[in-house]
Picture 1 (tube, rainbow, N blue to C red):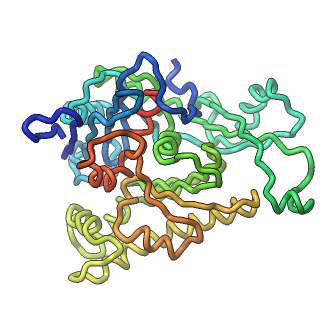
Picture 2: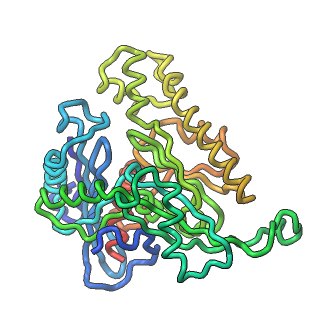
Picture 3: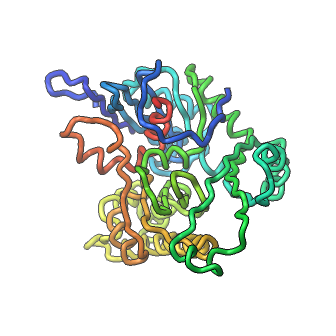
Length: 391
């Protein structure tokens, strides 16, 4: 199933609705002037492909078109199920969603799933110079990477040193020992994953300007200028990704092996209904509950409680280690649209709870505001990719 939206092509009120891994840690600059006038971001997830095309107009980014296609039918299963399709089937689905969404550009920016990468931080002694880090990181990274180092591509970024809090400046014990260590964020991506996405692009007879780990695209799409640490929670079909972000950079990353498809599957089995019906019930009622089936909310709550428990563990670990508190939690991804999720989360966390609104970063007709607000979290990664390409 494909849905689409073409912007600024309204006729009679009918809207047609490298280094490929180089610079994973791209900046969050405003749209500037360069030779690229349009950009397409493609998010190939485990259950669907989402695409977004934006264009530069008057120095600003405007939404040109967006669309999504479920991958389930290509695996001969229901829409919404997690799939593991071969390259040719993914390429076929990609060509279809680009066609149905009226995407005009043939050069794409694609995301790589976080499951294909390992994201972690290294703490190096303060006396280590920047010139030595390039040599030290691959050696130290071996301790964290469970596969031969030759099977991954490594990129890293030196994180800014943390500014002392008011309490630390006035309490020597809280401040800790002098000579802060150098913290390095490292991303190790499986070479096989990179090769797979190259093959998908080649099979689709398209080109890719770059690949980027999905979490960085999501941060770009969901964040403004947050001054305090923020927890970004990406509710996907197969997993839920947690990223603690400070000044635009990841300080902590964690994956929970539970997602939207697991919730739908639990509903299907518990209520003895087809997966497609369970998916519909989940979207229609969510945690608010179905008057005709009162156990629905309880079934969903088992999974959301587990996810919230894991989130709390990550937050407590971060607060204990860094002596910093999370000021805000941003929900993104398709699962963020689950009815009642925000309301339940408010009772579980002390921080402000916010649903991401990625499309607020681009111009669009006013009459689309409500649609884009409700669908935005699903397209965060695709939009984040397009924004980077247009920068």
